[in-house]
Length: 301
Image (cartoon, rainbow, N blue to C red; front, side, top):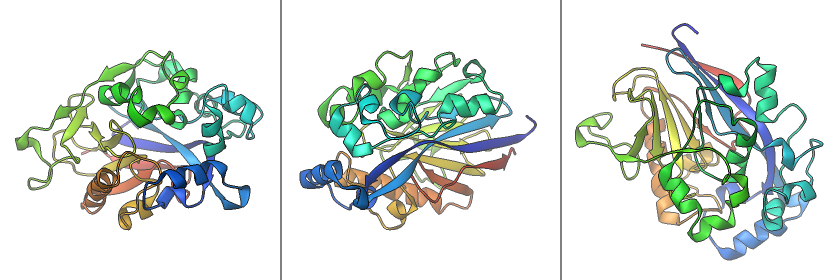
């Protein structure tokens, strides 16, 4: 693989949301109901991204998995099939579909990669559009999720959009967040994340999972860093659903689905601060229609 880090952006299906939802600006029950029952004319089609990282030291790491093939057997929206994975109201909310060849295992196979060739699969949070593709990847060497996300996925409001049958049966390695020591802050004392909770996945700061609460309590953003040691040189930030698109952090505009407005904006503020650092090569939100499939290459230091 040489001394390059390659980040392949993959679209692993689509969601068709009520068009105001990604940047709704406030959380209200009425908004949620409107999102479920929105007519086709009021919907926008957004990608569901996964990221395959080819790393010269740590091998092949996949961040998120997209939709599984089962929810869209014929490559189109199939409510009956989707309801086997999630409640009917979630199927109506997402209206998911996966064109032929776009499920994660299909794309990997086209690249000559089998699930057993994956050194690690990171699931940033347990919404079905991020986790259900694990069904096709169970032979990966590791499948990890933040322990805090797993704990809260079974509680509070998250049960409404994280159906157990989308993830409960899979062999996850649950890793706890740790408080970032005060002498390991980035960039002149700037703390990492809203609450300074991180997972140093490989112990060398090359992959950091940073807690960005708001969409769920345990959601993790992923920082891919070109240099070892906690002071990043060039890096890419994957926001998961803490931000739906770049307008989220540029305009401090929260989505219509989350835990609390203040918490969501705190995470967006941190994402914005990271985007402004000189070493930031890209900030990628999982459902941003402006992010097309492509490969980002970073040079190791």
